[in-house]
Length: 52
Image (cartoon, rainbow, N blue to C red):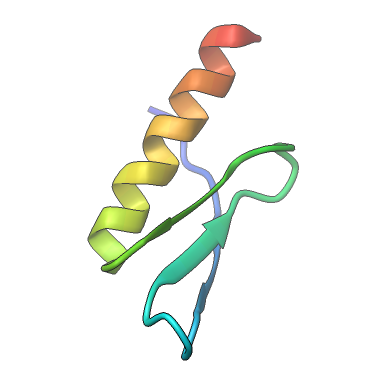
């Protein structure tokens, strides 16, 4: 299992967490909770690695 570092910010206007993985163009997502954001980012990374 690989580990990646995500940059995460909290949007005060929407209440959502937004994040991206540096070095992976297109690897960004959002979620209502940190757990949801983490799941979404895992899915995005999985798709990017499958296409590579």
